[in-house]
Length: 115
Image (cartoon, rainbow, N blue to C red; front, top):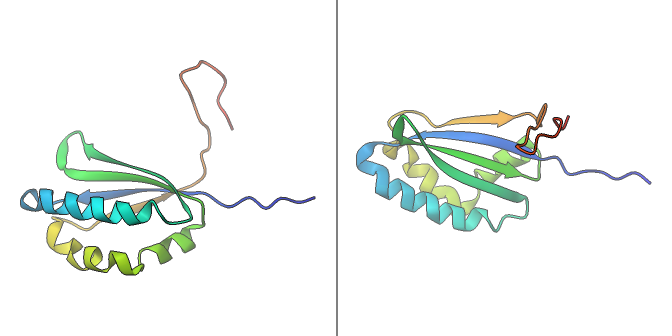
């Protein structure tokens, strides 16, 4: 019996937010997150601030789909307003980095790396 495993895509998104748009942007991001968590392929996400630039938010997302399928997610109707106003709230372009599956995983348990 052959089992087909759903591909997992992980990405990091860098969002350099204009200081004056910080609160509005975070509110729009939270509204989008409310929809994203309901997507069938959604696995997890976390939002971070850049330690050296608190106006830059860094998102880490994991999805149970291919990168091509994930790009389709950007066109969902609930994202229309967010995408339309994004450039006015950012001081530079959003940068999306798609990651390969992990080459190795290290954990604090002291066990050997998972490869």
